[in-house]
Image (cartoon, rainbow, N blue to C red; front, side, top):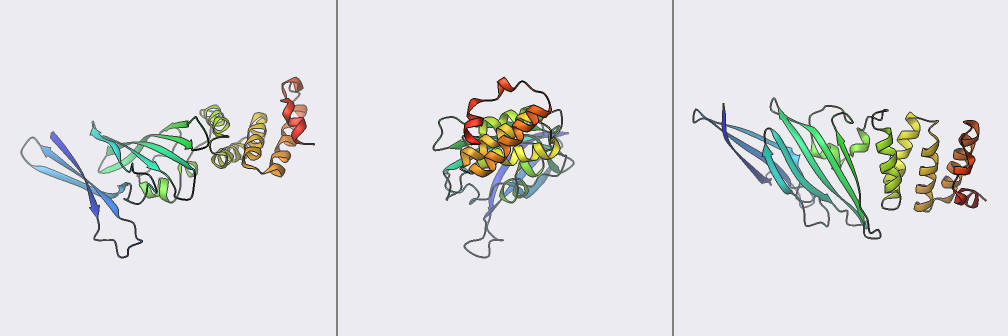
Length: 234
């Protein structure tokens, strides 16, 4: 049986060969068993590297490990961008591995007053061993999301709200939705709006036209078409 648990974050500098290499951080968990023995878990792909937050000062925050759930908050702020995001990870510890249990990413822009957040759990994502660098540094949740009737409304609404904060991410989400559900009418309106916000007027017009075409072919109420659609496709 387990007694107390101690958790440490160590800078793994021995594998850093050059100045531009990433300084990975090692997660070290010491399980103090009730029979006075101890077991140690260590892994260097669970916690963000020192350089991973870009220009943000917040690299790791709210770190906890309780009931086999590891939680922490990190920030991603690329140096060459006015957009950034705050990510909350909740990881389930099972059989000497961590698996993603819950993921929350909040998107911000210096040009927008509001933030927009997406919350995902293990019904939205495949079960796989967690590696931070496969989630943030090299890929994102968009590479793993399982789009289904269970989450289609949540994802579409999120992408719609994200349009003015981070239109490029909004477009990526909506493109995935269209690939899965090519006859979903409202998605074409949303992606056209996001392309328009991103300054890609030609792509916006193409999707506004597809939106109108589907509205007509599916015999939707054309009175619900926003007036600006007709103005933008002229």
